[in-house]
Length: 175
Image (spheres, rainbow, N blue to C red):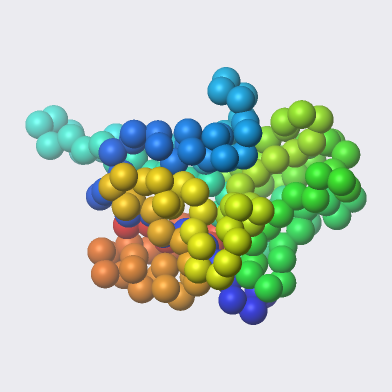
């Protein structure tokens, strides 16, 4: 387990599915339109007429406590950082075999330019402690938060949110 696990909190009451998080991620990471996305916005519809609901949830890598992608990677290219719990792909070691994609129950790792790719919490873009990933900074409705998992839990609890379920123990809270 990480010394200080980092993770996301997604406030679905604030997400309007504007795609700003997806677009800024592509821009900052030089990912061409029409190819992969490190972040996606899922839509959930519920209720019955006339009381229907629509919920939007912006998701990326879950930076799980027990990441399935790490356990199946044959080269060790996918790893969980001890200092912050973020799950990263070492492009120098990755052979593009796509095995990590089969180990992820959330369909996160994607094949891009002969290697696997996924959210790394904008590690290369954050220059000092406390910097946030670009998706969080860009969200016009402040639906995304990133930081120490205990802080994310506290923020979610204030809105009746919970940790995302999964056998890999995702580091994401959603309300």
